[in-house]
Image 1 (cartoon, rainbow, N blue to C red):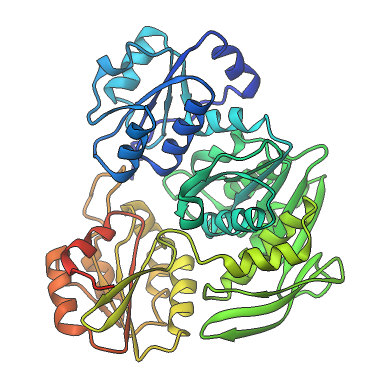
Image 2: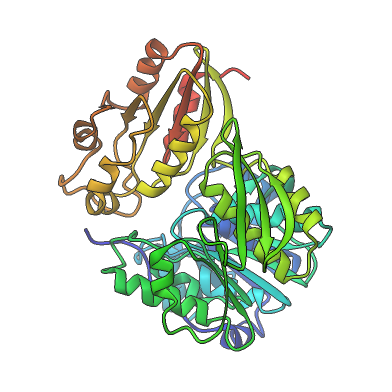
Length: 469
Protein backbone atom coordinates (compact mmCIF):
# COMPACT_ATOMS: atom_id res chain seq x y z
CA UNK A 1 0.00 0.00 0.00
CA UNK A 2 1.49 3.31 -1.08
CA UNK A 3 2.26 5.87 1.61
CA UNK A 4 1.06 9.40 0.93
CA UNK A 5 3.61 10.94 3.31
CA UNK A 6 6.03 13.70 2.32
CA UNK A 7 9.75 13.00 2.52
CA UNK A 8 12.11 14.30 5.20
CA UNK A 9 14.70 16.90 4.40
CA UNK A 10 18.22 16.16 5.56
CA UNK A 11 19.89 19.56 5.54
CA UNK A 12 21.59 19.18 8.91
CA UNK A 13 21.92 21.68 11.74
CA UNK A 14 24.68 23.82 10.19
CA UNK A 15 22.82 24.31 6.91
CA UNK A 16 19.54 25.08 8.68
CA UNK A 17 21.28 27.69 10.82
CA UNK A 18 22.46 29.37 7.63
CA UNK A 19 19.02 29.06 6.01
CA UNK A 20 17.36 30.75 8.97
CA UNK A 21 20.03 33.43 9.41
CA UNK A 22 17.90 36.24 8.00
CA UNK A 23 14.49 34.75 8.86
CA UNK A 24 12.17 36.50 11.29
CA UNK A 25 9.10 34.26 10.95
CA UNK A 26 8.38 30.52 10.72
CA UNK A 27 5.20 28.75 9.57
CA UNK A 28 4.32 25.19 10.71
CA UNK A 29 2.16 22.96 8.49
CA UNK A 30 0.31 20.59 10.83
CA UNK A 31 0.91 22.80 13.84
CA UNK A 32 -1.74 21.05 15.96
CA UNK A 33 0.28 17.84 16.26
CA UNK A 34 1.79 17.00 19.64
CA UNK A 35 5.38 17.37 18.45
CA UNK A 36 4.83 20.17 15.95
CA UNK A 37 3.01 22.33 18.50
CA UNK A 38 5.95 21.94 20.87
CA UNK A 39 8.40 23.02 18.18
CA UNK A 40 6.21 26.01 17.36
CA UNK A 41 6.16 27.14 20.99
CA UNK A 42 9.92 26.70 21.41
CA UNK A 43 10.44 28.71 18.22
CA UNK A 44 8.20 31.47 19.61
CA UNK A 45 10.35 31.68 22.76
CA UNK A 46 13.39 32.28 20.53
CA UNK A 47 11.91 35.51 19.22
CA UNK A 48 10.40 34.44 15.90
CA UNK A 49 6.95 35.35 14.68
CA UNK A 50 5.19 32.00 14.41
CA UNK A 51 2.12 30.80 12.54
CA UNK A 52 0.70 27.47 11.49
CA UNK A 53 -2.19 25.54 10.03
CA UNK A 54 -4.23 22.49 10.94
CA UNK A 55 -7.60 21.10 9.97
CA UNK A 56 -9.20 20.97 13.41
CA UNK A 57 -9.57 23.33 16.36
CA UNK A 58 -8.34 21.55 19.50
CA UNK A 59 -7.11 22.34 23.00
CA UNK A 60 -3.60 22.31 21.56
CA UNK A 61 -4.35 24.88 18.86
CA UNK A 62 -6.24 27.03 21.36
CA UNK A 63 -3.15 27.03 23.57
CA UNK A 64 -0.97 28.01 20.63
CA UNK A 65 -3.27 30.93 19.84
CA UNK A 66 -3.22 32.01 23.48
CA UNK A 67 0.60 32.11 23.28
CA UNK A 68 0.42 34.53 20.33
CA UNK A 69 0.83 32.04 17.49
CA UNK A 70 -1.31 32.64 14.40
CA UNK A 71 -3.36 29.50 13.75
CA UNK A 72 -5.30 28.84 10.52
CA UNK A 73 -7.92 26.07 10.44
CA UNK A 74 -7.48 25.20 6.79
CA UNK A 75 -4.62 24.60 4.38
CA UNK A 76 -4.42 27.50 1.94
CA UNK A 77 -1.45 28.56 -0.17
CA UNK A 78 -1.80 32.20 0.87
CA UNK A 79 -1.04 31.36 4.50
CA UNK A 80 2.71 30.97 3.89
CA UNK A 81 3.16 34.16 1.84
CA UNK A 82 3.96 36.31 4.87
CA UNK A 83 6.49 33.89 6.40
CA UNK A 84 10.22 33.44 5.82
CA UNK A 85 10.50 29.68 6.42
CA UNK A 86 8.19 26.65 6.61
CA UNK A 87 8.45 23.58 8.84
CA UNK A 88 6.23 20.63 7.92
CA UNK A 89 5.33 17.21 9.26
CA UNK A 90 5.92 14.33 6.85
CA UNK A 91 2.33 13.21 7.54
CA UNK A 92 1.09 15.83 5.07
CA UNK A 93 0.55 15.00 1.42
CA UNK A 94 3.07 16.34 -1.13
CA UNK A 95 0.19 18.21 -2.79
CA UNK A 96 -0.61 20.20 0.36
CA UNK A 97 -1.20 23.74 -1.00
CA UNK A 98 1.01 25.44 1.60
CA UNK A 99 3.85 23.03 0.93
CA UNK A 100 3.47 23.52 -2.83
CA UNK A 101 3.38 27.36 -2.53
CA UNK A 102 6.50 27.44 -0.37
CA UNK A 103 8.35 25.25 -2.85
CA UNK A 104 7.21 27.41 -5.80
CA UNK A 105 8.29 30.62 -4.08
CA UNK A 106 11.61 29.27 -2.86
CA UNK A 107 10.70 29.65 0.80
CA UNK A 108 12.95 27.32 2.86
CA UNK A 109 11.10 24.06 3.57
CA UNK A 110 12.36 22.03 6.53
CA UNK A 111 10.88 18.75 7.80
CA UNK A 112 9.95 18.42 11.47
CA UNK A 113 12.77 16.00 12.31
CA UNK A 114 15.42 18.07 10.55
CA UNK A 115 14.26 21.19 12.38
CA UNK A 116 14.21 19.41 15.74
CA UNK A 117 17.77 18.24 15.13
CA UNK A 118 18.79 21.86 14.55
CA UNK A 119 17.10 23.05 17.76
CA UNK A 120 18.72 20.44 20.02
CA UNK A 121 22.33 21.27 19.15
CA UNK A 122 22.44 24.05 21.76
CA UNK A 123 22.13 21.53 24.63
CA UNK A 124 24.95 19.72 26.49
CA UNK A 125 23.25 16.35 27.17
CA UNK A 126 20.90 15.26 24.39
CA UNK A 127 19.00 12.11 25.39
CA UNK A 128 17.17 10.54 22.44
CA UNK A 129 14.65 7.81 23.29
CA UNK A 130 14.10 5.39 20.39
CA UNK A 131 12.45 2.02 19.87
CA UNK A 132 9.42 0.59 18.15
CA UNK A 133 7.44 0.77 21.42
CA UNK A 134 7.58 2.68 24.67
CA UNK A 135 9.22 5.87 23.38
CA UNK A 136 6.65 8.29 24.78
CA UNK A 137 6.37 6.50 28.11
CA UNK A 138 10.15 6.34 28.58
CA UNK A 139 10.61 9.95 27.47
CA UNK A 140 8.00 10.96 30.04
CA UNK A 141 9.60 8.76 32.72
CA UNK A 142 12.96 10.29 32.01
CA UNK A 143 11.47 13.78 32.14
CA UNK A 144 9.85 13.06 35.51
CA UNK A 145 13.15 11.76 36.91
CA UNK A 146 15.06 14.86 35.81
CA UNK A 147 12.33 17.21 37.04
CA UNK A 148 12.19 15.44 40.42
CA UNK A 149 15.96 15.88 40.66
CA UNK A 150 15.60 19.64 39.95
CA UNK A 151 17.76 19.15 36.85
CA UNK A 152 15.55 21.56 34.82
CA UNK A 153 15.33 19.50 31.59
CA UNK A 154 14.02 20.69 28.26
CA UNK A 155 11.67 17.97 27.02
CA UNK A 156 10.02 17.17 23.70
CA UNK A 157 7.75 14.12 23.90
CA UNK A 158 5.12 12.44 21.77
CA UNK A 159 2.60 12.41 24.62
CA UNK A 160 1.40 14.96 27.13
CA UNK A 161 2.18 14.48 30.80
CA UNK A 162 0.22 16.13 33.60
CA UNK A 163 3.28 17.17 35.61
CA UNK A 164 4.66 18.98 32.54
CA UNK A 165 1.33 20.51 31.57
CA UNK A 166 1.70 19.18 28.04
CA UNK A 167 4.08 17.29 25.77
CA UNK A 168 6.98 19.70 26.06
CA UNK A 169 8.92 21.61 28.69
CA UNK A 170 11.32 24.48 28.14
CA UNK A 171 14.07 24.27 30.74
CA UNK A 172 17.76 24.94 30.90
CA UNK A 173 20.33 24.24 28.23
CA UNK A 174 22.10 21.32 29.95
CA UNK A 175 19.62 18.44 29.47
CA UNK A 176 17.44 17.94 26.36
CA UNK A 177 15.23 14.82 26.49
CA UNK A 178 13.44 13.94 23.27
CA UNK A 179 11.47 11.20 21.60
CA UNK A 180 13.28 9.88 18.53
CA UNK A 181 10.84 8.52 15.95
CA UNK A 182 12.16 5.96 13.47
CA UNK A 183 9.46 6.41 10.80
CA UNK A 184 11.04 7.33 7.47
CA UNK A 185 14.39 7.46 9.35
CA UNK A 186 13.41 10.73 11.00
CA UNK A 187 15.72 10.02 13.93
CA UNK A 188 18.77 10.14 11.69
CA UNK A 189 18.41 13.94 11.61
CA UNK A 190 19.00 14.15 15.39
CA UNK A 191 22.18 14.67 17.40
CA UNK A 192 21.93 12.56 20.57
CA UNK A 193 24.80 12.36 23.02
CA UNK A 194 22.92 9.48 24.68
CA UNK A 195 21.00 7.26 22.23
CA UNK A 196 18.52 4.97 24.00
CA UNK A 197 17.25 1.94 22.05
CA UNK A 198 14.37 0.22 23.85
CA UNK A 199 13.45 -2.48 21.33
CA UNK A 200 13.61 -3.27 17.64
CA UNK A 201 11.19 -5.25 15.45
CA UNK A 202 9.22 -4.98 12.22
CA UNK A 203 6.87 -2.02 11.94
CA UNK A 204 6.08 0.79 9.48
CA UNK A 205 5.91 -1.75 6.68
CA UNK A 206 5.07 1.04 4.23
CA UNK A 207 8.65 2.28 4.70
CA UNK A 208 10.89 -0.43 6.17
CA UNK A 209 11.25 -3.31 3.73
CA UNK A 210 13.13 -5.81 5.90
CA UNK A 211 14.62 -6.37 9.33
CA UNK A 212 18.03 -5.71 7.80
CA UNK A 213 16.78 -2.27 6.76
CA UNK A 214 15.58 -1.62 10.33
CA UNK A 215 18.86 -2.88 11.84
CA UNK A 216 20.82 -0.48 9.62
CA UNK A 217 18.63 2.44 10.65
CA UNK A 218 18.97 1.83 14.38
CA UNK A 219 22.71 1.28 14.08
CA UNK A 220 22.95 4.58 12.22
CA UNK A 221 20.96 6.25 15.01
CA UNK A 222 23.41 4.89 17.60
CA UNK A 223 26.29 6.13 15.47
CA UNK A 224 24.93 9.67 15.74
CA UNK A 225 26.48 9.66 19.26
CA UNK A 226 30.02 9.23 17.92
CA UNK A 227 32.73 9.97 18.87
CA UNK A 228 32.08 10.83 22.53
CA UNK A 229 28.49 9.75 23.26
CA UNK A 230 26.86 6.58 24.57
CA UNK A 231 24.35 4.06 23.23
CA UNK A 232 22.04 2.79 26.00
CA UNK A 233 20.48 -0.43 24.73
CA UNK A 234 18.18 -3.27 25.77
CA UNK A 235 20.48 -6.25 26.16
CA UNK A 236 17.53 -8.67 26.28
CA UNK A 237 16.31 -7.78 22.78
CA UNK A 238 17.88 -9.94 20.07
CA UNK A 239 17.13 -7.42 17.33
CA UNK A 240 18.70 -4.59 19.33
CA UNK A 241 21.83 -6.69 19.74
CA UNK A 242 21.85 -7.45 16.02
CA UNK A 243 21.47 -3.76 15.20
CA UNK A 244 24.46 -2.91 17.37
CA UNK A 245 26.84 -5.27 15.53
CA UNK A 246 29.58 -3.10 14.08
CA UNK A 247 28.88 -0.10 16.33
CA UNK A 248 32.25 1.25 17.48
CA UNK A 249 31.18 3.57 20.28
CA UNK A 250 30.51 3.11 23.99
CA UNK A 251 27.58 0.80 24.79
CA UNK A 252 25.68 0.63 28.11
CA UNK A 253 23.27 -2.32 28.34
CA UNK A 254 20.22 -2.75 30.57
CA UNK A 255 18.52 -6.07 31.33
CA UNK A 256 16.13 -7.98 33.55
CA UNK A 257 17.66 -11.32 32.52
CA UNK A 258 21.44 -10.84 32.57
CA UNK A 259 23.03 -9.97 35.95
CA UNK A 260 26.21 -8.90 34.14
CA UNK A 261 24.42 -6.06 32.35
CA UNK A 262 25.48 -2.51 33.23
CA UNK A 263 21.97 -1.78 34.56
CA UNK A 264 20.15 -4.79 35.96
CA UNK A 265 16.70 -5.09 37.59
CA UNK A 266 16.70 -7.69 40.35
CA UNK A 267 14.12 -8.94 42.84
CA UNK A 268 11.16 -8.02 40.66
CA UNK A 269 7.77 -8.31 42.39
CA UNK A 270 4.37 -6.81 41.59
CA UNK A 271 1.81 -4.88 43.60
CA UNK A 272 -1.53 -5.04 41.70
CA UNK A 273 0.42 -5.27 38.47
CA UNK A 274 2.88 -2.46 39.36
CA UNK A 275 6.52 -3.69 39.45
CA UNK A 276 8.88 -3.18 42.38
CA UNK A 277 12.61 -3.96 42.03
CA UNK A 278 16.21 -2.94 42.74
CA UNK A 279 18.44 -1.42 40.07
CA UNK A 280 22.09 -2.41 40.07
CA UNK A 281 24.30 0.06 38.21
CA UNK A 282 27.65 -1.42 37.16
CA UNK A 283 27.27 -4.06 39.87
CA UNK A 284 26.32 -1.74 42.73
CA UNK A 285 22.89 -0.92 44.18
CA UNK A 286 21.73 2.31 42.57
CA UNK A 287 18.16 2.54 43.88
CA UNK A 288 15.00 0.66 44.83
CA UNK A 289 12.07 1.34 42.49
CA UNK A 290 8.35 1.07 43.20
CA UNK A 291 6.51 1.91 39.98
CA UNK A 292 2.94 3.18 39.85
CA UNK A 293 2.38 1.99 36.28
CA UNK A 294 1.66 -1.63 35.33
CA UNK A 295 3.47 -4.19 33.21
CA UNK A 296 6.86 -5.87 32.92
CA UNK A 297 7.62 -3.67 29.90
CA UNK A 298 7.75 -0.67 32.23
CA UNK A 299 10.66 -2.29 34.08
CA UNK A 300 12.64 -1.97 30.85
CA UNK A 301 11.45 1.61 30.40
CA UNK A 302 12.49 2.47 33.96
CA UNK A 303 15.91 0.86 33.48
CA UNK A 304 16.49 2.95 30.35
CA UNK A 305 15.47 6.16 32.12
CA UNK A 306 17.67 5.30 35.12
CA UNK A 307 20.67 4.57 32.90
CA UNK A 308 20.33 7.91 31.13
CA UNK A 309 19.98 9.70 34.47
CA UNK A 310 23.05 7.95 35.92
CA UNK A 311 25.13 8.90 32.88
CA UNK A 312 24.11 12.53 33.43
CA UNK A 313 25.21 12.42 37.06
CA UNK A 314 21.86 12.05 38.87
CA UNK A 315 21.81 10.27 42.23
CA UNK A 316 19.88 7.03 42.71
CA UNK A 317 17.65 8.60 45.36
CA UNK A 318 16.42 11.18 42.83
CA UNK A 319 15.80 8.48 40.24
CA UNK A 320 13.77 6.37 42.69
CA UNK A 321 11.70 9.41 43.66
CA UNK A 322 11.05 10.41 40.06
CA UNK A 323 10.00 6.92 39.01
CA UNK A 324 7.67 6.66 42.02
CA UNK A 325 6.09 9.99 41.09
CA UNK A 326 5.53 8.96 37.48
CA UNK A 327 1.87 8.21 36.84
CA UNK A 328 2.00 7.65 33.11
CA UNK A 329 1.69 9.78 30.00
CA UNK A 330 -1.46 10.78 28.18
CA UNK A 331 -3.09 7.85 26.36
CA UNK A 332 -0.63 5.36 27.91
CA UNK A 333 -2.95 3.28 30.12
CA UNK A 334 -4.51 6.54 31.23
CA UNK A 335 -7.46 6.22 33.58
CA UNK A 336 -10.51 7.93 32.08
CA UNK A 337 -13.38 7.13 34.45
CA UNK A 338 -16.21 4.64 34.89
CA UNK A 339 -18.86 3.35 32.51
CA UNK A 340 -21.65 0.98 33.49
CA UNK A 341 -19.69 0.11 36.61
CA UNK A 342 -16.49 -0.76 34.71
CA UNK A 343 -13.23 1.17 35.04
CA UNK A 344 -12.04 2.57 31.71
CA UNK A 345 -8.48 3.19 30.51
CA UNK A 346 -7.20 4.77 27.31
CA UNK A 347 -4.04 3.51 25.57
CA UNK A 348 -2.16 4.46 22.41
CA UNK A 349 -0.91 0.92 21.64
CA UNK A 350 -1.07 0.07 17.94
CA UNK A 351 1.69 -2.50 17.30
CA UNK A 352 1.07 -6.17 18.21
CA UNK A 353 3.86 -6.20 20.79
CA UNK A 354 2.57 -3.02 22.44
CA UNK A 355 -0.95 -4.41 22.46
CA UNK A 356 0.11 -7.75 23.93
CA UNK A 357 2.33 -6.37 26.70
CA UNK A 358 -0.10 -3.62 27.69
CA UNK A 359 -3.07 -6.00 27.87
CA UNK A 360 -1.06 -8.55 29.84
CA UNK A 361 -0.31 -5.79 32.34
CA UNK A 362 -3.97 -4.81 32.45
CA UNK A 363 -5.05 -8.41 33.02
CA UNK A 364 -2.71 -8.57 36.04
CA UNK A 365 -4.52 -5.68 37.74
CA UNK A 366 -7.05 -8.07 39.28
CA UNK A 367 -10.37 -7.17 37.63
CA UNK A 368 -13.19 -9.69 37.18
CA UNK A 369 -13.09 -9.37 33.39
CA UNK A 370 -10.80 -7.45 31.02
CA UNK A 371 -12.23 -6.18 27.73
CA UNK A 372 -10.57 -4.20 24.96
CA UNK A 373 -11.86 -1.94 22.20
CA UNK A 374 -9.15 -1.88 19.54
CA UNK A 375 -8.72 0.31 16.47
CA UNK A 376 -5.83 -0.71 14.23
CA UNK A 377 -3.70 2.08 12.73
CA UNK A 378 -3.18 1.99 8.94
CA UNK A 379 -4.06 -0.76 6.50
CA UNK A 380 -0.42 -1.51 5.72
CA UNK A 381 0.46 -2.24 9.35
CA UNK A 382 -2.68 -4.33 9.89
CA UNK A 383 -2.07 -6.42 6.77
CA UNK A 384 1.69 -6.72 7.17
CA UNK A 385 1.46 -7.76 10.84
CA UNK A 386 -1.89 -9.57 10.66
CA UNK A 387 -0.64 -12.85 12.15
CA UNK A 388 1.05 -11.02 15.01
CA UNK A 389 -2.16 -9.11 15.76
CA UNK A 390 -4.01 -12.41 15.91
CA UNK A 391 -1.75 -13.45 18.80
CA UNK A 392 -1.82 -10.15 20.68
CA UNK A 393 -5.16 -10.28 22.51
CA UNK A 394 -4.95 -13.53 24.44
CA UNK A 395 -4.87 -11.82 27.85
CA UNK A 396 -8.35 -10.28 27.55
CA UNK A 397 -11.78 -11.86 27.76
CA UNK A 398 -13.14 -10.03 24.73
CA UNK A 399 -11.84 -7.62 22.10
CA UNK A 400 -14.24 -5.41 20.14
CA UNK A 401 -12.53 -4.42 16.90
CA UNK A 402 -13.30 -1.06 15.32
CA UNK A 403 -12.79 -0.08 11.69
CA UNK A 404 -9.16 0.57 10.74
CA UNK A 405 -7.87 4.13 11.01
CA UNK A 406 -6.58 4.94 7.52
CA UNK A 407 -4.26 7.85 8.40
CA UNK A 408 -2.23 8.50 5.25
CA UNK A 409 -3.42 5.45 3.30
CA UNK A 410 -6.18 4.41 0.92
CA UNK A 411 -8.41 1.38 1.55
CA UNK A 412 -7.78 -1.34 -1.05
CA UNK A 413 -10.15 -3.83 0.60
CA UNK A 414 -7.32 -6.25 1.42
CA UNK A 415 -7.88 -6.00 5.18
CA UNK A 416 -10.49 -4.58 7.55
CA UNK A 417 -11.46 -4.41 11.19
CA UNK A 418 -14.18 -6.95 10.50
CA UNK A 419 -11.65 -9.42 9.04
CA UNK A 420 -9.36 -8.97 12.04
CA UNK A 421 -12.21 -9.56 14.48
CA UNK A 422 -13.20 -12.74 12.64
CA UNK A 423 -9.66 -14.08 12.98
CA UNK A 424 -9.59 -13.59 16.77
CA UNK A 425 -11.09 -16.35 18.97
CA UNK A 426 -12.25 -13.65 21.41
CA UNK A 427 -12.94 -11.02 18.75
CA UNK A 428 -16.16 -9.23 17.90
CA UNK A 429 -17.10 -6.65 15.27
CA UNK A 430 -20.22 -4.60 15.91
CA UNK A 431 -19.84 -1.59 13.59
CA UNK A 432 -19.05 2.10 14.05
CA UNK A 433 -18.37 4.03 17.25
CA UNK A 434 -22.06 4.46 18.03
CA UNK A 435 -22.64 0.71 17.73
CA UNK A 436 -19.61 -0.03 19.88
CA UNK A 437 -20.78 2.36 22.60
CA UNK A 438 -24.23 0.74 22.57
CA UNK A 439 -22.69 -2.72 22.81
CA UNK A 440 -20.52 -1.67 25.75
CA UNK A 441 -23.57 -0.18 27.46
CA UNK A 442 -25.24 -3.60 27.32
CA UNK A 443 -22.11 -5.66 28.11
CA UNK A 444 -20.03 -3.97 30.80
CA UNK A 445 -20.66 -4.63 34.47
CA UNK A 446 -19.27 -3.76 37.89
CA UNK A 447 -15.80 -5.26 38.36
CA UNK A 448 -14.85 -5.10 34.66
CA UNK A 449 -11.84 -3.32 33.17
CA UNK A 450 -12.13 -1.78 29.71
CA UNK A 451 -9.06 -0.73 27.72
CA UNK A 452 -9.77 1.49 24.70
CA UNK A 453 -6.72 1.15 22.47
CA UNK A 454 -5.35 2.59 19.24
CA UNK A 455 -3.32 5.43 17.70
CA UNK A 456 -6.11 6.85 15.53
CA UNK A 457 -9.32 8.57 16.60
CA UNK A 458 -10.72 5.79 18.81
CA UNK A 459 -10.58 8.21 21.76
CA UNK A 460 -13.67 9.88 20.28
CA UNK A 461 -15.74 6.99 21.56
CA UNK A 462 -15.51 8.45 25.07
CA UNK A 463 -17.80 11.28 23.93
CA UNK A 464 -20.44 8.68 23.09
CA UNK A 465 -20.06 6.72 26.31
CA UNK A 466 -20.56 9.51 28.83
CA UNK A 467 -17.96 8.50 31.41
CA UNK A 468 -18.35 9.10 35.12
CA UNK A 469 -15.47 10.22 37.32
